[in-house]
Image: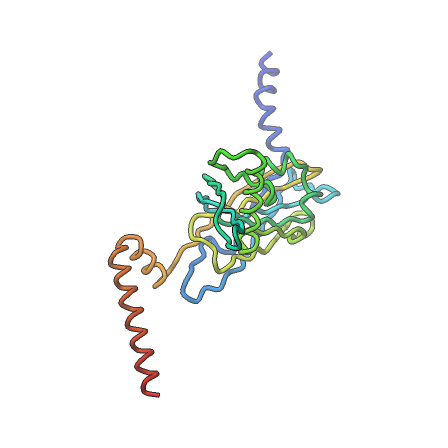
Length: 251
C-alpha cells in the first residue's frame, strides 16, 4: 500500500521531469532611449533542454512574443460629412499592449490552432484588447481591426513568421526590431516551445525600456512640474523665434 501511495505522489514529479524545458535570454535587459535613439534590435536566444538530453528526431517549433506595456486608449472613427472629415463613433479599450511583436519558426497558421493561439495570444489577431464600451459585437470587431491597423502602420504591432532559427534541434535565436517610437515601460519576452500544435513549455524574460539622460530629465520635469515646464517651453520657443528673426535681418 505504501508503495502505491509513493508512486501516486511521485507521478507528478516524474511527469514534470519528462517535459522539455526552455532556458531563454535576451541581448538587452534594459533599452535606454536618448535624444539620438533611432530604434534597437533585440536578440532573443536560448536552449531547449530535453529529459535525459535526448533530442527528438523531429524538431519542435519556437514562437517568441515581445509585448508591453498595457495601456488604456480610445479609438475614434472618422466619417466624411458634407465634404468634411469629422470624428463620428468611438470605442474605449481598458487594456491593450502598446507594443506587440511575434517571431516564429514557421507561419503562425501552421504553428498552432485557433484555440491555442487565442489562449497564449500568439498573433496580432489573437490579442485580448479588453473593450470597455458597450458596442455591438460587429462594431467592437470593427474598432479592434481599426486599432490593430493603426498599430501596424506605426510599426508597433508586427508579425515575423520564419524569423526564428533553430540549430541542432536545441538552440534557437530570433531578432525583433524595436522602433524609435516605442513607448517606455516594462515589457515581457515570452518564448513558447510548440509541437503538433501544442505548447510544450514556456518561459518569460522581463525587459525595461526607459528614457535616459536629458530625455529622462525632460520627461520627469513635464510630469512633476507641468506648469513650469510649459512656461519654459514657451520661453524657449520665443527665444528661438527671436534668434531666427535676428539672423534673417542681418542677412
